[in-house]
Length: 114
Image 1 (cartoon, helix red, strand yellow):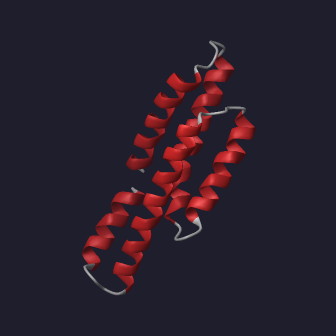
Image 2 (cartoon, helix red, strand yellow; image 1 turned 60 degrees about the vertical axis):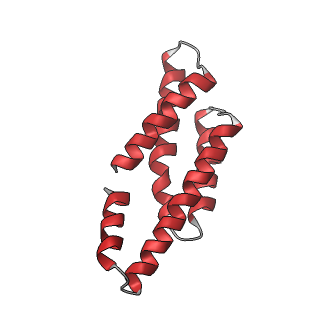
């Protein structure tokens, strides 16, 4: 979960500078909630093949729910991070099932999930 906490912080700092919310507290709270959902929502990307599509649906849903419209660069970066996590998890699942360097696959999932 540390990885997703770091991504939440990076998303929040980027959106804070890119969107520049008004000084009202609710706009700031919506930005925090959006960043939290976008950062920790990347756990969905660990599903092979369906992960990035579910994550893009999640991003569009939380954009409309929290009324935050991030720039296109944010969606592009989040999409690439989602695909990278999907490919890594698929590779590690295959390694684990075929018993090829199984200890590396276990360690990688421990890093991805904790």
